[in-house]
Length: 343
Image (tube, rainbow, N blue to C red):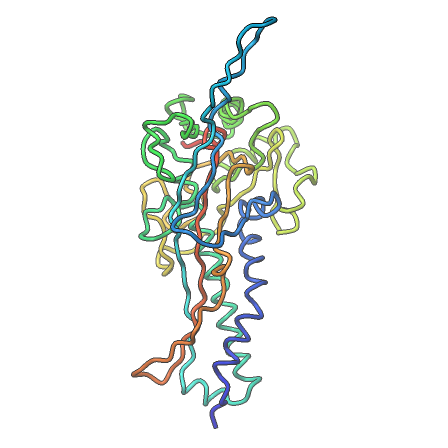
C-alpha cells in the first residue's frame, strides 16, 4: 500500500535540510566563504531590483582656509546606486507512484528521498558556484566575476551603470602578454601580481582574497616553492574550516578555485564566453584580486534554497515533484579596487 503522507515526507525532508544547504553553498566556494565571514552575504526582502548603494566620490567642499574666509557649503553628490536584476534558480526533486510503491514504508521513502536530496544539494551548490564565476551570458543567470571584475572593464553595463562613461565603475585588468610582455609563468607571475597589487591599494583598503585557476595557481605555487613559502599562516580560518588550502601573497589569501571542474557533457548550464572555462569555475588562465569589503552575495530572504510551495502533481503522470528554489544576485559596490590578471 502506498504511504499516504508522501507529500508531507518530501516537504519535511527538504525543509529540514535547507538551512544546512544554505551554509554548505557558502562553504562550497572559497569566495562565498570569505563573503560569509566578512558579513557580505546579506538577504533582501523585496523590490523590483536589488539596489546596491555606492559611495563613489569625495566631498567636494573640503578646503584649506584662513580666518574669516568664506567656506564652501554647497551640497556634494557623493552617493549613487547600482541596480542588479533578481535572478532565479530551481531544481526538482521528484518521485513516481511506482517508486513510492516499491519503497513502501516511511523509512524506505525517506532513504530514497535523502539520496535524491543529497544529489540535488550538490548540484545546486555546483550550479551557484559556477554562476559566481560567470559573466551572465547564460539566460537569466547571475552576473559573476567575469562581469563584475571584467577582463575588458572599459565597456559594458554593470548594475545599470555604463562603464564606458564612468571611470569609477571600472575595475583594473592586467594582461600578461600586453602589459607584462610575455605569457604568465613561474618566472614572472610574482612580478605581474606586484604590478596589479600596487594599483589596488587605498590606504588600509586592499585585496584580501585572490582566486586562481589551475594554471595561475600552479605558477604561483612553483614560484613560492623556490623560497619555501608555500603555506598559509593560519589567518584564514573561514577557508581552512571549509577545507581550502591557501597560500599567502602580501595580506591576501591565494586560493585554487579550479581543480576538477567536471565534464563538458555535464547538464549544468555553464557560461559560453570565449574567456570562460568550458565547464565552469575560475576561467582558464585567470587570477582575480578581490577586495571582499565591496562584493556582496544577495539572496532573497524568502527564496534562499527553500522548497517552493505547493507540491507539483502531474495531471497526466503518476508522479510528484518538489522544487527547490533560490533567487538573488551577486553585486559589487566598488569596482576600481578589484582586479584581474589574464594571460
